[in-house]
Amino acid sequence: MLAAVTFDQPAPGDDDVIELLQRRDGVPTEVVLRDGNTLTVLNIAWGYDIGDEYAHVTTNFSPPAEGIEIDFFCTDTVAAIVDPETGTTLLSAVADPLPAGQAPERRSGRDLSQIERIWQDGRLPIVDGVFFVDGRSYAVDVADSALHVVGQVDLAEDPEWLTSIDITREAPAPGGFVCAGEGSHGSEGFFARLDGDKRLVWVCYLSESNPFDQLALTGNTLTVSSTSGVVITVDLDEPV
Image (cartoon, rainbow, N blue to C red; front, side, top):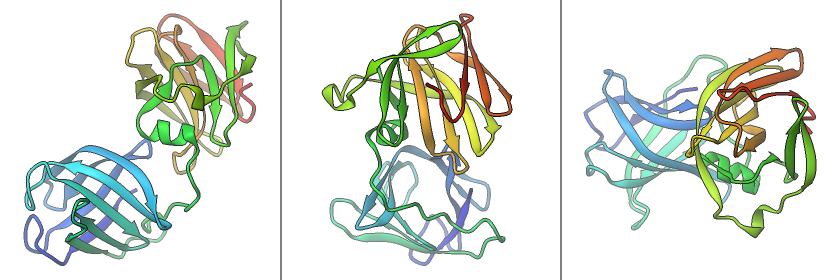
């Protein structure tokens, strides 16, 4: 989803219109000028401030300064870029009208669960397990192409024991999407269910599966296969 905004204070060029927060797998990845020039977002994380959505962005555009770290606040159709150190508004914007069904998204103001925050940071716990956004976390083993619960996981016990992940596969699924990919070590793999807005529903991480590179859906049943030949079949609503 793209939200078009026009800056009403000094911007990269007079009357420039940017496509704000182009999204890949629910995470904004770049800002695109209407003239086709791309401003790469170097780092981004979502959060909330008094109920308002904001994206904390490091980008490479100039002005105001190359490599500046900014907060990009989005509340319904109003946006502003704010210097996080001084609170000074650097650029402000109002969204252009978009076609029906493509209005800028406003996220729920609820607090994110721990696994949602980790997922949005592009990481996962280094624990063979299935993690739900409602807070349930289970350690699992793989046997007979299925996941078997062997215990519960408390993510708060070791919050820094994380790996970086990359989504390499994605497919539409009932009620949303499924995706899969790899971790920072070659032996790691994961697969996940996402909702219609590509927000996490649950994710399964395995430390010795190798990356999952095949997704097959039959109704509400997902079968994933890894590069090392690990095959797992789960129900999308009840993976464990």
